[in-house]
Image (cartoon, rainbow, N blue to C red; front, side, top):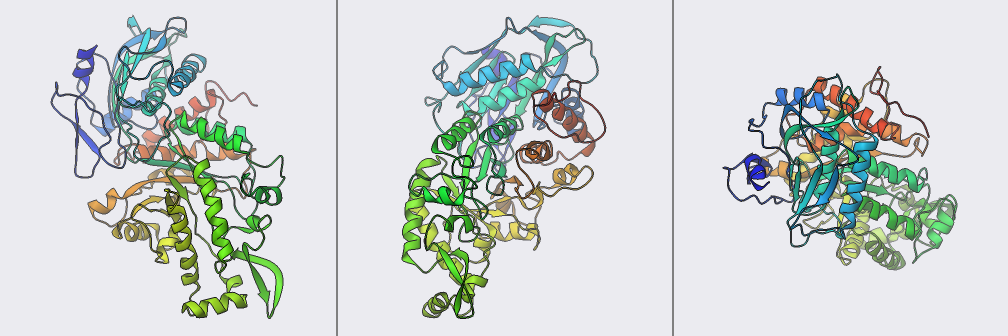
Length: 570
């Protein structure tokens, strides 16, 4: 088995862009490590066949059309030789010498899940093809090589996603990448004309182009039941997304049940018992995601988008005035009161303990200054601080104090682009989230990276915007690095997120609106930058959509057609 692995794999080297690019000479020790902060990884699915790797994109796309791999791997080879898989004999097991064994719940969970996918929903691969069966594959061994396999760890931006995969052997530095490897393995399994499960002799070298591949769901404008969130985490893993951006609260409602400030949800949720996420709910989401290699980044957006906060926290919001009298309405968070910062200190101390990820999204977008302008106390404070009539300086004053509070919890932070645009002083590891279409997002990406900050893109990937026809094609054509900048600037792009805002989305239509349109974003963030052929993408995405449907996901159709196994309903 060692010779098989060494024949088909080699050490990775680093190219100028910081991405994994080429194979070194055979026989060199293989150490699959993340080469940069992007956490690049490698996946090998190989046998002892001696065919050369397929580097030509056109040929790679044609072959991947046959097996419907999504997202498209970086390199792979395949042959007509097929191996049988029998549900009664095939097993996924821990290899001798692996540092993670049966006690590793993440692996055991993945083994069970993908065994069910392979034999419960085995993938069909298009036209009937005749095969000569050389042998039967009875075992897939999983070998973890790190002294700390991170069975109980949470994924992070720096998680080592490296792995090599053989037809009978899967080797990974840590356990998280095994989930991605098993997804690829499951996509290669197909039924022949006789209903027999098969996998062809195949070699895959694979790693993600970007380390931040996210989905944003909005649970404030419409409450999403827990099972809907978990179902979409499952589909995210199928598409190799690795970040769940949980926009958990907003103006409309405050469904997060805080132990420190229970009145926030008691007064701010649509219903204090049925439309809240309890600490147990939140913990279950984080754990479900962890089992699939997915980070959970919570967003608590201030000082705007906070109307629901004010219902349960007295004096948090700014009283608005009509002339010289209070109007009875409230605006953004009141930035001039010490009590505001006392509250934020206690609140984010709790948040930092509840959410395990190293980052919190602090929002900072769309602050309406009209209420601040109407308030005489705010006006006096502006004069005392020397801000004049520039209310963006007041916003910056608040944001800066908030960032200091969050920094004291040892968390990093993500912010929407307005915080950068308003020249707030930011830590060097701040991640700037670009979302606006005007001015041109390409120009914003250039400005942010020129300032030395890591950035991620969402502007063209607001999937709540819908239109008649195949809008996935426009989504697919976007490239986060398509802006004028130096190679060093391009390295600062950590990825992007597909966003599904909730004004017109709830549990009844979320999944079909999101999938497979989000799958187009998944491939853009995973595959080589030169993977752009719409025809190949359509063929593979159509089949990938049918894979999701067969797994019970109501993913909407791309166009006219059918799946061999249609969605059977609820």
